[in-house]
Image (tube, rainbow, N blue to C red; front, side, top):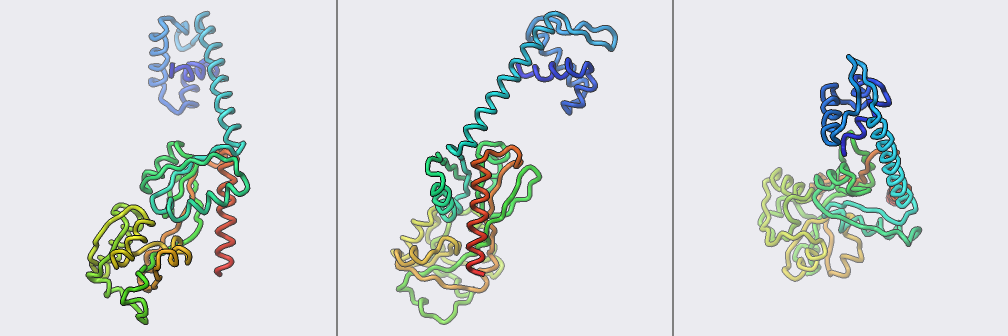
Length: 300
C-alpha cells in the first residue's frame, strides 16, 4: 500500500495543505492518494466536515498500522546500515578502463586492512556507472572522468593521459622522438569505441587529421598488450596501467608523444550524500584519497 505514508502525514499534520507541503506534492494529488487508499481498503478513513478532517475508528486502526509499517521499514534500513558499517560488504561500479587499471590496486589497499570485506564489482560505461550510483545500486562509482552532478559527490584521485606502447622489436623503439603525424596509417590495436579513452583517441586523431590503421578493437587491456607484440602493432593506453613490470612481462616499450598529454583524464570516485553512506564506503574513500595523495607527493 504505497499511499500509507501520505495518509499518515495527513493525520499527523491534521491538514491536507500542510501535509502536501511536507510531502512536496500538490493538495489535489494528495487528496487522490487518500481516495485511492480508501478505495483499496474499502473503508472511509476520514469524516469530512467542510474543510475539517476527523479520523474514523477504521482510520485510527489504519494509522496505527501505518506507524507499525514505518517502524518496520526503519528497522530494516537500520539493519542494512549496520551490516554495511561492519565492513563486510561493499559494491563498486567501475568503468571498463578503471576496472582494469585502478580498481585492483584499490581492492588490494582496502582488503589489506579489512580482509573479511565482501567486495562486489559491476562494470559498465561511465554514464551507466553514474546512473548506478544515483539509483543506489552500487555504493561507489569509479570512473575516468570528473562528474558534475548535484546528486553526487565526486572525489578526484589522480590525472592520467595516454601513452604510445610498442613491441620492443618495433622499428621506432630507438627513434629519438615521435611526432603525432607519424601515427598516420600506423597499424594499431585500440580500445573499443564508446569508452572515454577511445573517445579521447578519436578526438585527438581528428584534431591532427591523423588516421591510424586500426587492426583490432578490444575491451581488455591485457588482451591488447599480448596482441601488440604478436601482431607487431602499436597501441595507446593510460599511463596509470603501464607499470614497468607490465611492460617487461609483455616485452613492450613506452614512448611519449607530447600531443598525447592533451588526452588527460581525471580518475574519480563517486558516491551519494555523505550522510547516507556506510562506514565501509567512507573508509574506502578516505583510503583511496590518502593513497593517491601519497603517490602524488612521491612523484612531485
